[in-house]
Length: 391
Image 1 (spheres, rainbow, N blue to C red):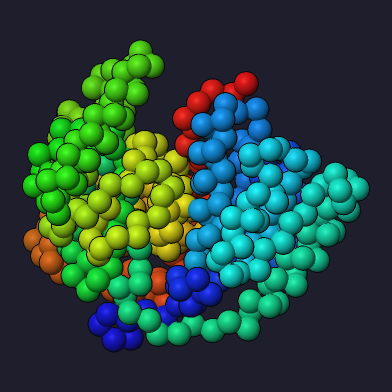
Image 2 (image 1 turned 45 degrees about the vertical axis):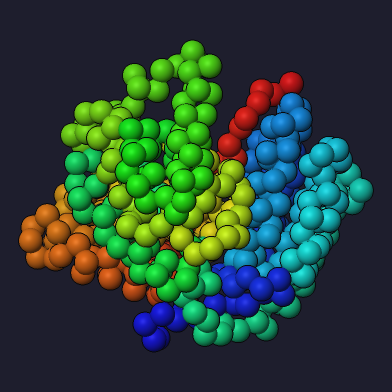
């Protein structure tokens, strides 16, 4: 593998996948069991299930719809089977399939009621998924520039080692990708409160700087409107155990994941960054599953998740590389944490060396190396963000 090349799956719409899954996508809570039964019957089939898709206020339903469409459009899905229970206007299988038609990938629909019940729908869906899986098995990886990657940046269970070790090293890896023409996505707005000045200093323009400030302020106002003062609930309990004392301290460490490269723009939850190379700030909450899900729906093919205390989070469709700079956490959680960069603390490894190691791991995973959580089927990182109440 050359320095700036990975081997991926070119898609008809010009995107490049790092995995080649059949995605079985549920439109609603009541289609979940059928999706899971279909996926259990064969290899390479990933189900995405959730409790939403109906009885939501319209803005919330549109938010769910956009998130589901984004996952279907993600380049890691070589084909998509959408499973519906009946028909929920605004989030039906047909509407999702229509939006995915432009990707050029094969998309099929199964409706439980139209099939004649769950047994028949499971059979119909299994046959469709089997045909899709066989069809995309003919696809082969091809060498492509690393610039074709959209890299997710996320963190969780942060402690006092996170900022100066794993986060800073990940920033170096992001810098390397961006310098070669790639893009990264930084998220978790509540965990960037207090770091606005730092982020604005990296903004590509005054307009982007204003967008950064507005996005973080808007998130805080939404939280305050609920009656909750986030400055009283952050850092979280595990952060406090890890030695973090204020949201500003946590945020300044979290912002380091963006590296030193330009912050090129701000995008909504599940929105795909399509502009110039650089780092994009996505408007997600700090909730790990919801943040990671928004990043995947925005088109990221893989994600690096830094953690001080260790973590098990991994998105089902988007390989999730976990990195820690805490030697004790790595010893305790080495079955789900892929890289240990605690040598930075111990003086055995420079930040630049750690960043290069992360960058190499990104290219290796993009080319097919399995993450630990993929091997263990730890698929805990899919959770759709809500913007409204159920009705």
